[in-house]
Length: 621
Image 1 (cartoon, rainbow, N blue to C red):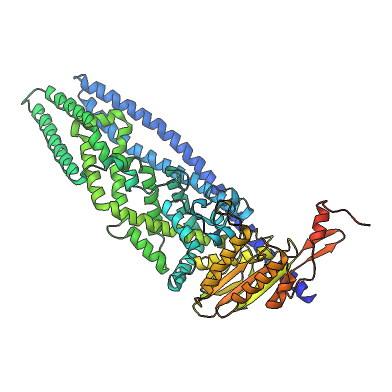
Image 2: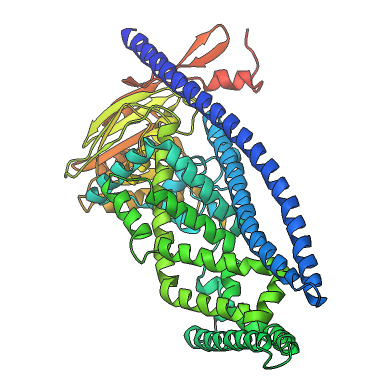
């Protein structure tokens, strides 16, 4: 009785702490949302005013050109040139406002997603990571690591292809290198303490996803898959030729103007040169477009990557892993340096959005030739460095995703041990996919042993096994765990829970479970530490065979380096290992569960009561 009272008291305390934690987090998000919405409305008003200014300047440019070509009003050219310079500047400012507005809209989306996580609406997120689930990923299937209503769906804040892939890899990696694990834990803790940085970073990363399509269909920028336009072009040679032609023509045009002013030849020669260059530029546009077009079509995606890099550079990380990643991103000759230079090329290329201005520059200096030559130089120097920088950004997204669980409830950082003995201690562990205010914490300590868990239907046996398994997955990935403390040996995790038949290969449910357990036994023969979680062992066969088979399995999976937790309804198995149980209690005709793990064998059953509640049995008088 005292044990039950203490467990209830502990459960109440945990739920109260998590409830307060969640309330404070929700209040902070609502404040941030209101601030972002106010700023966004202000940016929209500014953007609309600048649009009107651009239109007026464009009209001024056209008027100046018309006056200049009339012959009598030579100062019209000066007016047009001045307004053109102002137009270029205001266009850049207009684009800056657009990007700021896009950032605020993305930030609002990110804050709403975090609010959904805290309020239980995360299972509507579109990115479930289902494509990472392979046929024999039994642990991932049994523990809801990927797919609908999965761990991945809840914690993923990665929006780039590499970030998503890296998160999937660390959630499936199993036995981690302990040095790498400790360094990753340090990085995750640092990000967890700097949520403002991560929310800003994710808001920028969301820009990549919005530009590249839904998760699972994205491609990294400037790879062989999305630069087909230059597949059969010698970029270096073509860029050199275009530069020589562009410089030569620009010099010729300047000479034409000087000669006309000095009356060496008629002013009409300028117009001849102008229209000849404009025609040449138009006829050869395919060549220059192939060099710069691949980059231009990914402009907004690349801009988002650059802003992500700026954010990382200014973060001032202290942990070793994050500092090294920041160095890869923002060091001398790095991807960030390259993207900064590419921004200038793309800003210049955006002149094409204004045909009058673009045609004018093409006629004066073969504008596209100069840009294409600069783009060719950039690709030769920075394209490979860009890929390395993007992978470093993906690593940070992965680390940020692992930190998410610590923003949703009270967590702790687990301790993973390198030793031959299989050890597992979980103190007040709960399931991360169950809302914190509903989850019931439980504790258990195991060392080289097997335990049998009995309990009536719906009492919490399977959830407890999954709570242990999913938190061990988090621990091995480097993430915080939903427990006051977790200490575990570095060991291989096996599960046998959602076992199904395979009609196509003639495999029954019972035989499918045998194959899984065979894998456990074979691994156990290597004398390496392992943890086996088996739910309702051999439920696919009759009770007599089940008990005989289960006894044999329990004996094979018990020994040095082995931890095995088996749930069952067969009390006959309780003689072969230490026992724990879950139980129900009744208030009138109503059945209730406390979901608290207790020592010893279960002494109650509820199958008949549940059948009666469902109306499948008659009430007996």
